[in-house]
Image 1 (cartoon, rainbow, N blue to C red):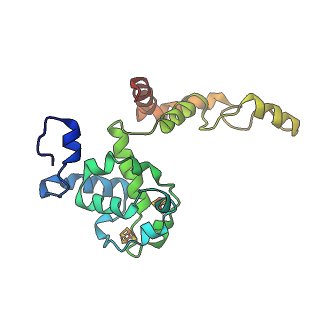
Image 2: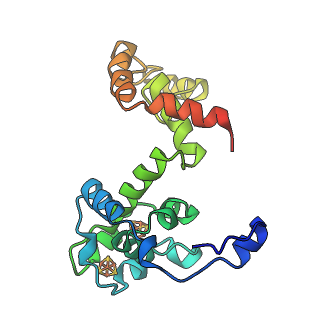
Image 3: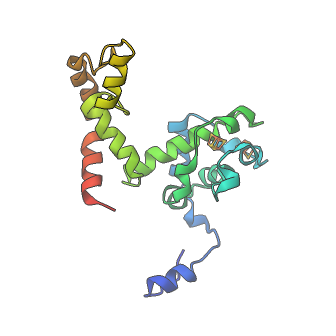
Length: 191
Ligand code: SF4
Ligand code: SF4
């Protein structure tokens, strides 16, 4: 909790690094557990997850810290941390956790909650737009079409590229969750 300096630089420099019980939002813990369907509160901080994580040696990303934040209900710290997006979802931590927790799914839940607050890297938003318009996150292009023909294949694969009549079904699902609408809005608002 900040002490209320009027200058944002001072505020940042002298921010209160102690945890206070009022920083904890038990609703956040509940939401993360509901979405991830994993028992975050059973974590006893052994560190096996971080020791398994391919992202940890090359960054400040620490999955164990995110699990701790989930348990402590530290919503803002979790959702505004750029490291949230460094998980490769390799599931090594989930494979090895001695408490049968799925830390990967805790990260997925936090990313979902972050998106609900418009906190999301642009590449995800671009992917949403591509899937909405083509049915593919990585759509076909002219170079690939020429390569496919050279290989004796049809220019378009047996997907929505060849059968665009299936696209409205995909769009209906995405519209239900307002994915395209939100992606367009956040991208148009810029950084
Ligand atoms: S491996 Fe499991 S119990 Fe150990 S710190 Fe990670 S989440 Fe917690
Ligand atoms: S799933 Fe994510 S958090 Fe778990 S080990 Fe892999 S990269 Fe790290």
